[in-house]
Image (cartoon, rainbow, N blue to C red; front, side, top):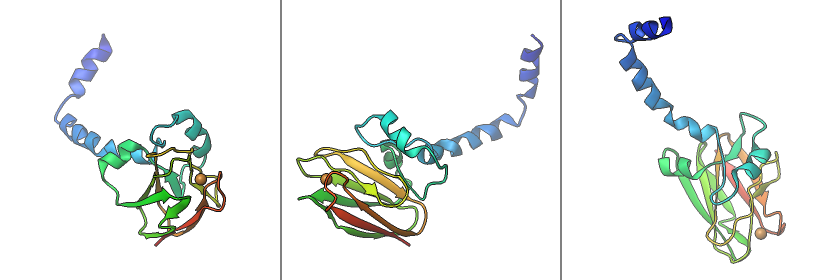
Length: 151
Ligand SMILES: [Cu+2]
């Protein structure tokens, strides 16, 4: 009972300020949950969750829809990453679309970042937060290799 009256009293002129602050928090999902389109969230979380500040991490469909980060599009076609060398600025999301009728993934040499396998039309999105060179391959077809240069 006492708590109820306290709550009402605190609802003064300060509350509208709070509400505006809440809107700004929408973007947090980007750094938080990450998963790949059409694949199980749990599989991915076990692979990506450790290390709060990843230099690169998978991002969700929602993050892409928010359109808040620049996106560089690439394809996986004919057992090749195309282009196999991408240069982007820090904070860019690289979005690969698999155009093969065969499942592929994007597995990075450094760290333990790896996407799930995606089939034809499947998308893999990775945001690069720190400058550097990121080499990757498809773990099913190790001859498929690529490089993302983040500057
Ligand atoms: Cu492959």
